[in-house]
Length: 268
Image (cartoon, rainbow, N blue to C red; front, top):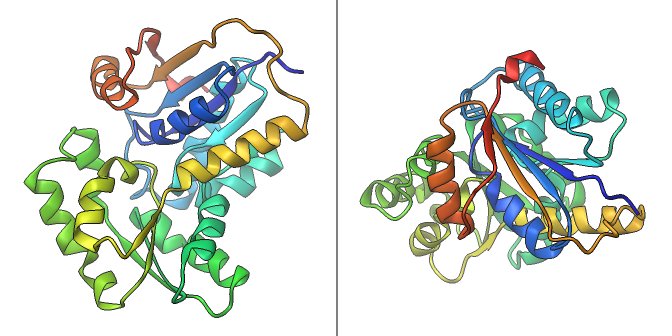
């Protein structure tokens, strides 16, 4: 048993899609969430910068005595997961592998689309991993950089979101994909819009759900479950604009975010 909290980080509020799934699948666990809101988005940064930022986020979470880390950001998972596992002596889970496995299970015609930030798509992390698991899979990646800002502004149910989705997803519709991986943790918040554009026949894969399953399996298999029956504590930290995070994040989680603090991530 291990009563220390689980640490989760993302470039902004998108990682709350992962947090929400972990809260549902591991309802007794304490969780510390860090959103690097001062430096969002990660998707347009260089590889070196993404690794630097990710290491700083991990150092901060380690200062809070966490027992495991979840990189709830596709860009950071695609670029910094392996370097982080080599550097830090703590279990670290990313979002790419769980999403790739789910896509292979979901597709019927072996035509899989992946949408994400420019960093995630250009890294070809999903494309390479899916093809290594199933050599017959045809994988098409499309960068959708505006989606992150749309979600961060709370515009997911607006005409702006619909117009952007219609533009970005046109290529994937032409390829007749039957499975679409939401390769950025912000994107499940746009699920309704994406489904409307792609049509009911296209399965949307949410790596957040699959990642939470992987976290649960890892926690249980390593005998790291919290043994206390106390009500779980959720603490939130951001690098900028805590009130905006409290408002938008609270709406998404459907619960009040009470404990939130702004920190200087450059100190880590």
